Length: 248
Image (cartoon, rainbow, N blue to C red):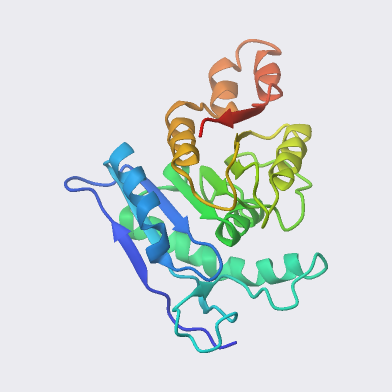
């Protein structure tokens, strides 16, 4: 499928240099404009953040007429467990280059960068972080999943999973399985499940995300601070952060 240059929506601080960079990746068939409500919530919580939302790199092939203006990161046509990873990997180099360009243009480094994805955008964010550990300090995955569960823990990226308990498109069990695998690998992750919520971005989960960004101290930070105490850093790193229910 031919691709064209995506549009990018951006919301910058009213004054001063950005202190954080939040990159919002929409779901399949949507566009950057569909992330505007989430962008508004993040801007109110973090007024010095630069928030950017790009269109998916390709036109949504589920709408041949193009009348809806939808975009996608990879095609769903004929998608199955056997080819999902291959399709995701095809988009990762271009997405990584775009992330680096956003970091350069805003002057915000990787540690203060958050990849925030919904559905297909969350899949891409998770797999990009897995492919390039440390490209972003945080990944916030809403209603997403791994294309394939990871085989190694990330050393420089914290993962936050947010999911609706009643999601019929990407069931919440994918988030639970991802959290379990990351915990087994002694990675750094959190999970929040909203009861009575389907495949959507509800206010309850957005509030959880803001709370995680404000309060969660990455285990690597604990390890650096507590490294002088024998065994303590290891216990903190293996503590994990179990499932928490989000209030509706």
